[in-house]
Amino acid sequence: MPNESQQERRSRTGLSDYDETLLLDRTHIPVPEDPGDFGAGEQPEAELGTGTGPILGTAAATLCYWACACTYTVFLFITIYTTRLDDFEVKASAHILLLLLALLLESYLRLQHRRRQAAGYLAFYWRTRSLLPLATRVTALGQGLLTMVAFWADVPPQPDQLCKLQIIACLELAAITLFTILYLAQLWRHFREVQPDAERYLAAAWLPVPGCDHSRGPDTVVEQQAEAMRWLSRRCHDLQLEVLRLTVVRERHEQHRGRAAGSSRADAEHRLVARERELRALAAEKDVLAQQARAAWALLDERSAAAHELEAVKQQQLDENNRLRATLEEWSHRNARLEAKLNRTRARLEESQQQQRRPSRGSTPELPAGTDQSSQSQASS
Image (cartoon, rainbow, N blue to C red):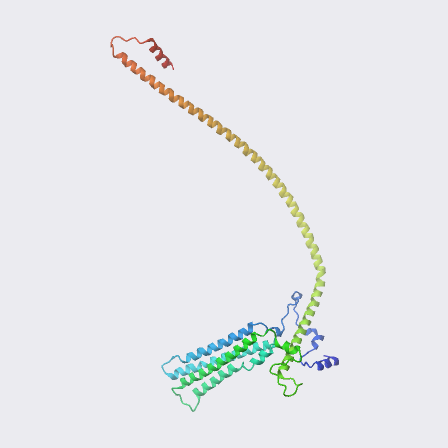
């Protein structure tokens, strides 16, 4: 519990939401179990509404609701059943879905606007908080009028009930369209805001807050100023929680680092010894591979010398084959010339024999001595 001095300081500051017991008791601070998650805590609530993503989601949700209202209005002018009474009952019962969508839209818009308020966009929250229930109220009013037209005891079923439903739906669509236009205009104005306006309102005391009314006196606190002070108090509270959480995490991280220092040194020595063994094994393997490489190079040189010798023997064989082929061709030409000369000699012998038989059949003519000798030399050759 805070002491008297702390209570006096709290009374002077005037911030009722400021809880100083968190500074004395750190058990309220959620801290992760793993010290490795240093600085990875949850974001404070004020950070949840920043960014354009959630606000763009509200614009999309509003446009979807307006599209559903347009679809329902068009659905009323499409004939489904032959009788107008049955057609009215089906179309009137479908209006309850539009009311459920309006309730969901209002809940979603309120959630997102609270986040924007926590982020410090107070002017946007003040301008749009009166627009949030407008869609639900218009749809509920349309549902009430529809129920009164359909189930009022004094009003019997009439054939113009469908026309009344169409008129109610058109008026409801006009109101929803007006709500959509006003809300999108506020969103467009909000997109042009550079920084949260709560910081600007609290930065200087002379800066007037939009919408403030000092009719009760210059020293009175209006609702907008109280809202800005509550935002500042909540922001300080979130920052205190974050500072304390980071302090506890830092202490745990230092303790864990001190305990792990000895084990990390032993692990480093073991890793160093293992690396040295690996280096020695790699050096021995390198020597073995170098010896194998030298043996392989020597074998390659021997094979290269043998290949050169085989190439020389091959060249000699080719030269010998060429010489034998030339000799064979020469003897072939000489044989051909001798055969031709033999054929000519044989032809002359036959002619000479025929000439010897023609002059005298009983007496053999005497051959010249030169002819007999030439024939004998040819026969011997």
